[in-house]
Amino acid sequence: MSYTAPTRHMRYLIDEVLGLEGIAALPGYEEATPDTVTTVLEEAARFAAGELAPLNAPGDRAGARLADGRVTVPEGFAEAYRAYVEAGWNGIACDPDHGGMGLPNLVATATQEMWQSANLALSLCPMLTAGAIEALTRHGSEDQKALYLSRLVSGEWTGTMVLTEPQAGTDLGAIRTRAERDGDAYRLFGQKIYITWGEHEMAENIIHLVLARTPDAPEGVKGISMFIVPKYLPESDGSPGARNDLQCVGLEEKLGIHASPTCTMVFGEGAGAVGYLVGEEGRGLEYMFTMMNEARHKVGLQGLAIGERAYQQAAAYAAERVQGRTVTGEAGIVGHPDVRRMLLTMKAANEAMRALAYAGAAAMDRARRSTDGHERRRQQARADLLIPVVKAWSTEMGIEVASTGIQVHGGMGYIEETGAAQYLRDVRIAAIYEGTNGVQANDFMGRKLLRDGGAAMHALLDEMAADVEGLGDYASEALSEVGSAVVAAVSDLRRSTDWALREGGDPATAGGAAFPLLMQAGFTAGGWLLARCARISADRAEGGDAFHQARLEVARFYAAHLLPRAAAYGRAARTPGSVVAGVPTATVTGEL
Image 1 (cartoon, rainbow, N blue to C red):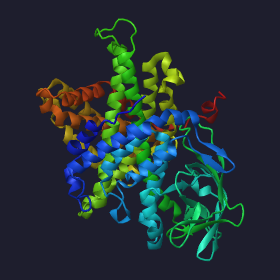
Image 2: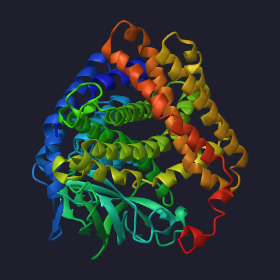
Image 3: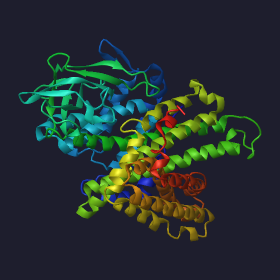
Image 4: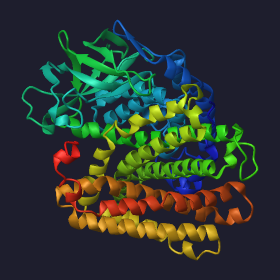
């Protein structure tokens, strides 16, 4: 199935809804002119459709393979990655001082969506590199930046996050990998699992950022440090030298993303893997969260990206598949109301996810480049608040959209030949890695809501309320319906927020309410942004512009069919902790 990037909708969000002009006025983003952004998105769309998408299904069938310590990727992947690097795509949002384009994260997010829609498995490799670039940019020494950043930015070298161990998944405080000082460097010993693109030969070197403990480190998270552990030790001129003491000893057999090697890595079977401390000892987890926040936003984007790919295939199938007499008189099953409902659910969810993910990216840009200190702090608080919602809500919705795509195909959707099942298999991991969605919910409740007394959340609620105020009074029936529904949803989310602030001091109550509250926030934020789109498009829709008319129709459908879920999640969020934590374990585990 082919893929066509929705560049018209991307440009609309970037330009009109989220204000590219204001972002381009920030220091360092001067190159983000309308013409430049248009060219970048159009070229990225061509690359995604022409180079990456054709490899998606064959890569899924072939998968990555391990033999004699070497990982072999599917045919065409290395060539596509080389073309990606040569075109400069790896450095879109990176500092020009290190060879990047220096464009806003908002623009890079649109291209990242394209790579992930076209070929999720392959796109994971540069996604991890982007996290390594961010971590070293913020926390690396000047010598480390000089040696590694330009090569990572170009894509000449790739990067990984190396955290998890068999006994230490979410609880990273339990890691056992040790780092022993050896002159100016360290020697690392230990085993790590679930290392995405931990071994391959598409690039000339792989830079692992590894969490480990020094011998005298305290127990728990305060004893964790971060180390640069290259696959090949760089020579004085930066060229790859001797092979380091690390190897891939296993690849996971996974439900999806078969072409992405998920590696079990062993460090230090001999003299120890040479590693170089990043920053200070004991601050490794703090540094790693720099990578993880970047990655969590991009993983949330995966829910949208696969949702878009699943929607495009389902819509094309529904237009061609003939089955029974339709209500609309069209030959294809798209004329059946229930099929229409499913496709509109997919489309509306995708547009809401895209708006929310891009809004998070715009907040990151303003937080990084605003010249006003107060505005930087405000935008950083907004980005921090939105990231767990983007990650968790969007991946939950992406799974639903991909599943709905199978349903549109009927029995053929369950057959691998059509390709519809791959999207569901691929996207399922997105709700798990980079912190499960339960972890995101706890982060949203504890660190993003309770910690600041709801300040960032109330600021968002106030903006939502101001944005939709008066929409219910518009003459346009569609805009009025959307406005009234979103006003009610925002009010109900405020009620849940205030309830959480009152009752959240009880860990059982906060833990039980966290996920439904996050989902309520996701559905409400999606409705708010689609309402903003409807307001922006209203006049041109009345003038007969089909694209802008579609924005009203999508917002109206979302308000009627998806936004009501927010109220249901709100009711679930506002329940005592005893409803969840108070239930006897024997009941939970099925003994009773």
